[in-house]
Amino acid sequence: MKDISLYIPGNSFFHRCDCRVKLLFIAVYTVIAYMFFTPSVLAFLFVTAMVFNVIAIGSKAFTHLMTKMVVIMMFFLIIIHGFVNPVGVTPATVYGHTITLPFFGKYTVEGFYMGLVNWLRLSSVILIAELFVTTTSPAEMMSGFHKIGLPYNFCFMLSASLQLIPISTREANIIASAQRARGLSEKTLVDRFKGLVPMFVPLVVSSLGRMETMSMALESRAFGNTTKPTELRDSHFKKSDFAAAALAIVMLFAFAGIRAVYGSLDIVNQISSIRDIFALSFIGR
Amino acid sequence: MSNSAEKKVIAKVINLEHVYPVAKGSEGIHALKHVNLEFYEQEITAIIGQNGSGKTTLSKHFNGLLRPTSGQVIINGRDVAKRRVSEMAKEVGYVFQNPNYQLFCATVREEIRFGLKNLKLKESEIKEKTVEILDEFGLRSIAGKQPVSLGMGTKKVVALASVCAMDPEILFLDEPTTGQDQRGKTRLGNLALQMKEAGRTIMIISHDMEFVARYADRVVVMTKGEVIMDGTPEEVFSNEEVMERAMIKPPQTYAIANHIRDKDDSFPCVRLDADLTAKLLTEKGLLK
Ligand SMILES: Nc1ncnc2c1ncn2[C@@H]1O[C@H](COP(=O)(O)OP(=O)(O)O)[C@@H](O)[C@H]1O
Ligand SMILES: [Mg+2]
Image 1 (cartoon, protein in one colour):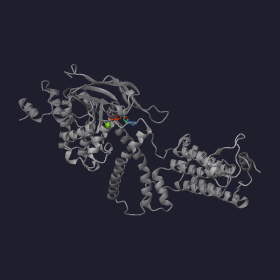
Image 2 (cartoon, chains in turn purple, blue; image 1 turned 135 degrees about the vertical axis):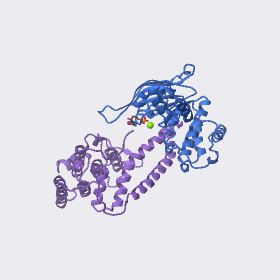
Image 3 (cartoon, protein in one colour; image 1 turned 180 degrees about the vertical axis):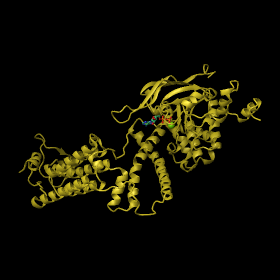
Image 4 (spheres, chains in turn cyan, purple; image 1 turned 30 degrees about the horizontal axis):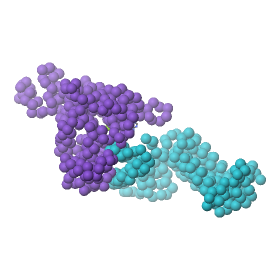
């Protein structure tokens, strides 16, 4: 049984980093990703985000749920855009052949370009968010959200529900074994889906029950008495936090400068083959 | 067991070992170490031991919910490892510790029907059997109720009924008495006795020593993944060394008898009977 909890405990630079700095990085990456329309800048964001993840959690960065999501998205976005994006005109040649799908027509160079750009954008943001969720413990996350101004009750709700995910998974596994122990066949995929529906009842009931117990426990411990409770883990900006935040700000201004001088670096009108995309974005025109 | 020689062996555990894998690189949790046991028909066996001693792990091998790291579990002459859990369900009934997780149907009646449907019985047979079971377990009046809305004690009975409906030869009860009041315990105990009379093999995991002493024919003591003793309740509960190793407190009457036997070998081991104990104590002049 795999634990799907998102947080991976550790002691890397990013684990020690203040939660707000990591949120700043997410913001900066998102803004930069949507300022540019060229694979080169986006690839830079993608690679740095991935490197950060490797520094933070090592080889788990490649097997993490969110990384897998990025890989799956690559196939979907690049394939779908290639066939359906309306900017596509030039058919792409793959080893001298064009690819045609019935109803969708030809796979186009411009469509591939759009797919690549959109995938790199989304995945840069997802990967930097992965860095945040894997290196920030629920307690820190809660205090971080509170510090950037979200209401305390909301923060508590958020972190409490994040912690419930692994519990629900564990319960789902127990219920599945109970069903099998009572003879529910597990041979085919259809069989497994049949078991899913009855699973919801005990799952929902148990989480409602747990919520009720939790809310009573919270109230009996004076939750909500103040909107500014003392933090469980009070964090202050350290030198390294300032340095990391400065790096994020510098990145933001540097890329904003590039954007102001050179524009979004959109080359969609200058390409006529997939090779062009790489030549123009990475080697220069 | 005195009479175990004549009884038919239903289940056999041979050199069973189970290691729970943990993170890569580390060794894993050695939850069972070379366990050898035999279980006979028409017998209630209690498996006792501290939390984490491997009782649940052992029990889950009987219907294939867990697969052995090494060794075998043989039921009716066939190796469990080669069979699917759903296939085992008609031979081995398993009542989980927490009834909340095993009741997932809309009504108590549906709950009973669930296993029968999985056995692919004819509708007429299912109907008949359901009525029979509802009566047997005294659930008729609540047959249309949602299991979720029932009290903990009744839920346990429903869970037990839903498993017994499938007529398994072997029945595993994981901590059936936790959260039960005296009435619920007596009810469960009597149901266990009834099923034993019907020829089933029953295994009970429990921390409730009074319950074990009252209903079990045989007690298996586990610590740290090993079976350290296997005998009648009298033998087990009067063995102070084993009790200490397993960190188990025997029922009070046994404890009293054990204390007296420290000084007086002739004092018998008394099977859970306060009146008899009191009488013996008076005879010995220890109680005035
Ligand atoms: N799913 C699991 N993964 C890893 N270790 C487990 C798992 N289930 C049980 N264990 C470990 O195996 C040992 C035996 O557990 P268990 O069989 O549940 O004991 P008991 O039922 O006697 O309390 C314990 O050390 C427990 O921590
Ligand atoms: Mg257990």
